[in-house]
Image 1: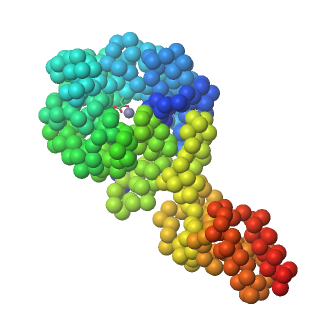
Image 2 (image 1 turned 180 degrees about the vertical axis):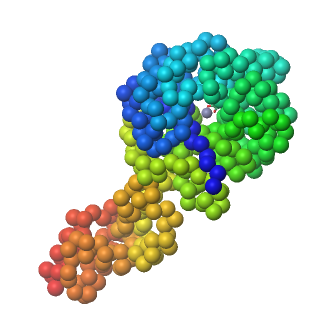
Image 3 (image 1 turned 135 degrees about the vertical axis):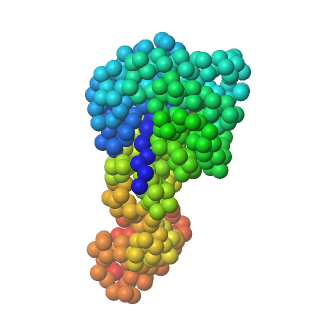
Length: 385
Ligand code: KIV
Ligand code: ZN
C-alpha cells in the first residue's frame, strides 16, 4: 500500500474563501484538530501577507509538534526570511515557495520571460534551502503550463534543493485524464525526479478537484493538498474528507492510503464549519447531514436487512454515531415499524397498518415528520380502535 502524504491547506487556501476570516485562537484550534486527524503537513498561512498571519503561523509552529508546519512564500527574499522567522521553532521546518509558470501568468502577471522565471525560481529555492530542510516548490497554474517548460523548470529547482514539487490546477481547468498525463510526463521527462515527492493541488471550478486529485495519485503523486469541507478560493479546493475516504474505501483500486485517523473526520468538518461560518450542504459527500440518511422505502428495507445494500461507508468510520432513517413519503412499512417500536409502540398489526396509512397521508402534506407527529398518529390509532 502506497502512503500518500496529506498536506492540509484549510488555514491558507481555505481561509481565502470569500467571507472567511479566522482569528488567532480559531486557527490554533483548527490546527490542533488537524494534528489529531493525523495530517502530515499543515499549511498554517502566508506569514509575509500580514502581521496577523505571521503571528498565527508562529503560534501554530511553536505549539503543534505532531504535524509538519509550513507557510506560503512568494519567490522573494523578504517572504522567505519572514517565513523562516515564523517557522524556525517548528518540529520540521518546511517552506512552500511558488511562482507561476503558465504563458498567461508569466506574460501578464509576472511580466517575465520563461528564462527569468527559471532564474527567479532557482534563486528562491537556493535561498530557502539555506534555512529549511524541506523546501516545497509550486508551479502555479501548472495545468496550463507547456509541458517541456514545466519539465525544464522542475529539473532546475530540484537541482537547487527542492524536496517536494507541487503541480497545482490553480484555476480548476483540467480533467482527470489530462492531469494523469501531466504527472506521467513529469515522471518520465525530469531526470532527477526521484529526488523529490510529487504533489497535487486542485481547485473545484468545474467540480473535478477530488477526481483530479485521485487521478494524480494514480499517476505518481505522493502528496495531496486539500482543505476540510473543500473550502477555498472561488469554488474551493479538493475536499480532504472525500479524498481520504475514497482512498480508504477503494484500496483495491487505488492501492494507496493516507493513514489519517478517519474517525476524527466528522468532528474536524463540524469545527471548520462552525468557525468559518461556511455551512456544509446536506448532500455533501462523507460529512453532509444526509450522507448516511435513507429515505426511500426500498433503501430503508435493504439497509435494515443488510447495511451494505446501500451503504458503502459506515458512519462509524468517519465518526458519525449511526445512520439515520428519515421517515417521509418514500418510506416503507419496515422502517416505519422499526421507528414505532423504538418509540414504544406495542399495538396490533391492525393498529400498525392504521398508523401507517395515516402516516403516508400526513407525509404527503408535510416534509418533516417529527417524533411528536408519530406519537400523535400512534395514539390516535391505538385509542381509536
Ligand atoms: O492554487 C494554487 O496554485 C495555489 C498555489 C499558491 C500553490 O494555491
Ligand atoms: Zn490553491
